[in-house]
Length: 267
Length: 66
Image (cartoon, rainbow over all chains, first blue to last red):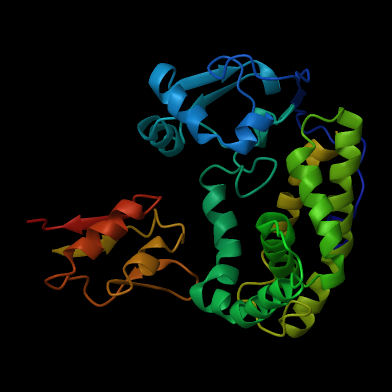
């Protein structure tokens, strides 16, 4: 299988008979009761979820909602831990609470590995990523990250009021991730849109949701062949000038991950 | 007192070597590893328990608790 073929953008080819997931009815509007109708998209939750969680722990420790195709919200440490460690009975494949439910057969990979993965795949997926996040690898990112943070602060000079999240913090992870992946810094604003599309576009009509999410995948799929080729050639990610141990990963494994993460997006 | 990491369970979250650098380090792949023979020196018992309590995979065992 050629590398370029694996990362080809666009929907899965016709005749792909992998099981499809289910789409649920979009229920919007203000939450009526957090115990029976919770929504992580409600502005009250976004503003301050902790009083809501405290209240639920007192009167309904495992809340339920009919939104998002039906879901449960455990709020006590003991329950969260019991569920998280019981990987025989609980799967992470539908961990992203949205209007699309991946099919059972998508486990153990899930739609967005590794957060949607179950054992044993979860271990392998993390193993692939870990070398980029060792203490020494992260320490190498520190000087450039500090310099970027200083430049953000310098740009705030002269403003009376500053929104620390909007004007400062939100730029940092996007820039660092783009740097790690070897994407040009000027693509930063585009990444901010990608993140908004992914995280905040859950209640959009399916067609618009797919169009928006597809923009990120098209960008990534178009960038991967060049990155992979360059990494194979010189043993580094483009733009980083350093060796990434374990890259390129096992081609079969990586290809399967990418194709499977496209499944919910393109259907 | 002695600490041990179950390498089957460890997923490389790095909490142990971050919180208790006197007892744990990381290997080349980013997984946690016990420094030396794992014997906890006198006075470092709290560090050992801190690492064990913070491991999201429950991969750290503290043996010989007094």
